[in-house]
Length: 352
Ligand code: SAH
Image (cartoon, rainbow, N blue to C red; front, side, top):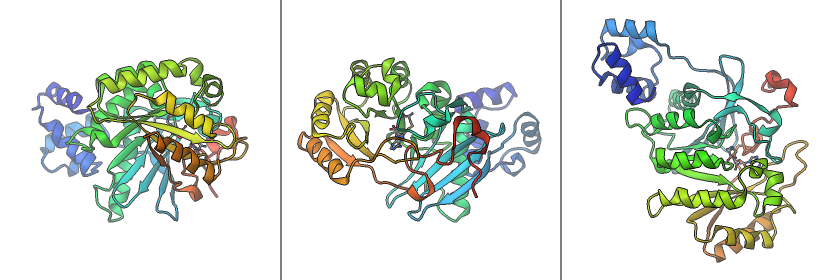
């Protein structure tokens, strides 16, 4: 429940609405999972809540720490499905990368999650459980409760195909009585589900990242099949519409995976500059993370650098995404590193 929903819930119990902010704080800031420990709530109310509600987290099936400090958790949901959450610490911030669906339906040709197929949407509480558990586990290790400063919906799944649950979870990410994250530090990444992008612009002032990856429809149809439904021209128009509703200095992030000999030539860079002209953007070049049977190769460091310089020279801020958590299969697109094929869903996270 977001704050409004929880206020309505307390009013329906004959209580004052401010109870909602008390409970939100206990739950999301103190990570308390037992109503009896909520000391500013009366005993009868604690009992009533325990009868009506429960606070349960998914089981941590795998907890892996990379040599670079990146931490990956595989979380087992009540129905046995497993999702992944990744924490990426940096000097000045901590980014949590969360999943929005079990598997993914988009079938992007270079993404390992695609090989798993789509199982189902995550519920609001399953989306929230990821930040709740990560915050709790980090805190238990003596790290500050404030170590998650940034949140990216770049894990498994397409967040804009689980629109309702994602925007309701974002309500709670942003609420000062809950996680209190800055809207500039919450990023929704989408392959370009245009109707949902339009709705998001009216609902939340968060950061948008577009997984572009190609500069013409022919190639994009192949890499991101969703492009057949929402081609580049329409996607770019939607980006412009989104930005019209944003504050003046806002920028959209363009994600571009660098695939050797596929989309990494200077001609591609030139076409990208043209495509993005007039749009306030930051380009994120993602070196492709290979996985068995992907059929693609990572662009050479020189090709990535050349591509970046070309965009820079055209005045486009361009950063090369650092590889993090490579040794634990936590890097972009590797979140189901252990999956063998689509039929073996339940076995894929059983690690040696
Ligand atoms: N469905 C959403 C969010 C999940 S993917 C989207 O498409 O944006 C997060 C990012 O990782 C996307 O930009 C995706 O294209 C990229 N990605 C997927 N597989 C990858 C791989 N093997 N190497 C590098 N980036 C990858």
